[in-house]
Image (tube, rainbow, N blue to C red; front, top):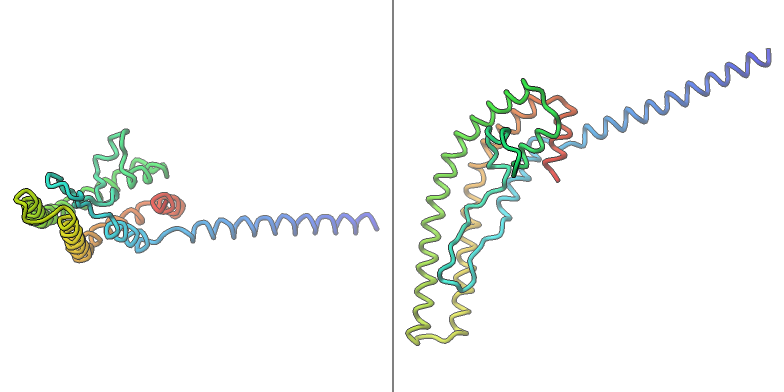
Length: 213
């Protein structure tokens, strides 16, 4: 009788230990899934990266070629990115890392194709606007450099004026980005929503975690 009672107690303890371990495992899994980035979080992350990209002005080099149209690489993802193995876009790399099925890849390619069509129009307008800003900036910088050659200002004065010009240009570019950011975030949010729809919960959690690094 005593042995039977002991066996029952042992069985009960074993069950409780197993149940506790299972509960902890489920809670851990639930936390891992719930800690993934939302669509809105990923969109905001890309937007902030775009806004915070340093503005290159080239110091006092009048021949410096500006390149302020650089975007976060995730904005430049394309459907053809699945076909390349070198220099893989980070967004494509994160999708591949969750091992999508062929059907999932096909659906994501379609979403990327639609995204590309939309984003290219925005990028074209952006390049044109920035090109005009850069032309004015370069012309102003050359004019300052000519003042030194003509002896109308000294080097110290030139440096002050160049610094002020650079600050003015940086301010203009940042203002442009703030205005243009919403236009970029729109199609990117649609893309993220489509990817979330195609991937299962586990894949989305891994994908969003990868993209947030």
